[in-house]
Image 1 (tube, rainbow, N blue to C red):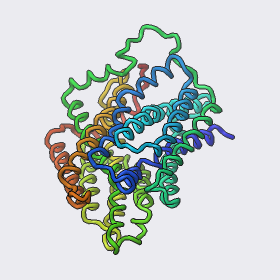
Image 2: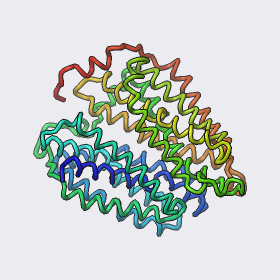
Image 3: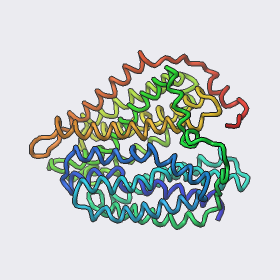
Image 4: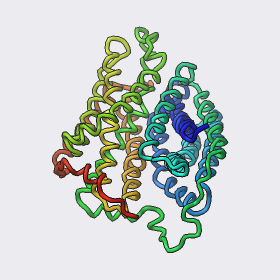
Length: 424
């Protein structure tokens, strides 16, 4: 079996695990358990909490003491065992801690999977820039495949979704031990401070007004991402209460409809180079914010019958909303920072979006929905919820236009990629 195929399997399973429950956990929480929205917001904050510290800590372990592929395997095995215990939890408070433990095991595997893949490709003399992206695409395919498997097996409201994820995690954990060795590159190295090891040196970037403003908006947009992940699936499930919509495809299999978002995501990646060269990074990121407004606004007025086109269009728009900020934002960080701290600066960007942003979006949205958009019987005003989210994204977009100052230089990205590599 070629190394590319072996890494393709790794990428597929890596995101299959996440796709098996991330989008459908809301249906399990609200439709099956009938737990509150305020508590559910805390569940999605676990990804952010784990993202703040675990990837850096496990990176140090893989850098200095343990082979990355072995650490990667152990984390997935532990995560798989944790996922198997989730269906046994009957209390929402305990559910939070179990999900947090699972995220502590899972979130560092995202970066470790890249480290393992890069190491394996380089060991075979392959070009990671050319050969890794086609491998990574299979991660998105794995996410979509998991969503389809869960919805068509009828597991969206069932605890069985966690068993599906657990099976994939345990399989990947064992499989990781068969991958080429990825030994610690800094084993025995001295002279590196804890600040450098944790990537905290990048926080000095916040002294730069433009970068500080950018990272603040990264945090706010990271919150928007959690809103759509947390509530999209359960929003469609709630139409089951309306007899006219009960037998529609989007109500029976919401995850199938929501998977259009991931398909769109893969397609919009291809459009980014054109938009960056034509409009510049600031405008592309602004397009992302406007796309978030459209994403939430379309959901507010859509329904599973005559308004299904709005829901599908909102899923298509998601690709622009997600890619145009996350990928363009990563490129902005790359062009605005010194080579010696670019890696830690990217870590800071991810910390703001997937860390602090996720915690902010998940926690506050849960409280707002519970206190302002849920009646005494537990019914949610989804029209009001999505319009509130759209207003949030619109405010961010308007503020971004006036606060974020950056002049488009057409040669900026080309110069970045033509400059010689500098050792960190």
